[in-house]
Image (cartoon, rainbow, N blue to C red; front, top):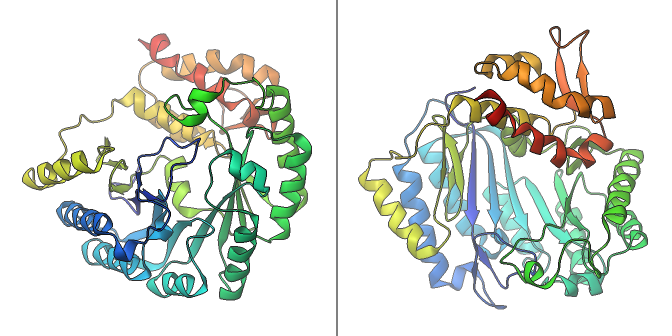
Length: 400
């Protein structure tokens, strides 16, 4: 594991409204919100600058930066450039750095997009989620289909060579035929990368309070499984590599930043609700603006030291295993063996045996002793990955 982080995640927690499925740490600013006119945004950026300035510096420069949210495209291009300047002065931005930014249709125009590009953003993740107005309305989205089409037109006019389109499967009232039609329309936009997430019912969200999994108007488990298999087959046929459980990419367009997470490598996390992983410590920031401000002051007083404990060896092993299995290429056995504490390696074989027999887990090598790589099959192993990963948690009890 690299000692110094090569990636930085920056959380921009502002949205015009909260979508019905959203459990992210955000602050709702209203339908007319713009970063350049909001005092709340200005106050937040000051806190962000202080956190960045207080963070200890390693010897490596940043290879990736990811602006997530929230809705980062509510910020003005000058504000994005300001944050990148802070990061560059503190850590350095490497030549060829990937700078990704989540954007929502209806929150930017071509001029604003050109400003982001001039600031350094070279990868866009467009939060479409659905392509039918009735589905967008059903999940509380602020935009509609016409704004998606306009946003895509601007991305093409800009000539951006790396952009992704995000979709959600399993929305209320969504049928398999809706999903098929939506996939075809999405690919017609010619994105370089597609992320497809299954709807998760978080307890404190509107959807979590309104629906129970499997009950109408939500699709059944059989229907959502069919959507997943359909997505895999269709996107692979269209030239997209299903390289991670929820992600598809054209050649040379995998998200470099997210690969940092899936390889369980260190990364900085900045801002409200963000998590960092440095010096074998996972540190989560508070999820409210008031508490985040207090946290930054405490962080400054501690001279950039975190009181959180170092991740125990077994937890590090499980994180490496579970994150690595999300990738189609899986994880090298040598990496797992090097991190395996005690009798964990032997217990892992027992736990995974039934999933190997089902064909969900594929061990590459002549035997378990001669294992070279461990991976999930696609799409079936990916589809049932939650069951596989849940069983991996049992390693804690088995190895005790």
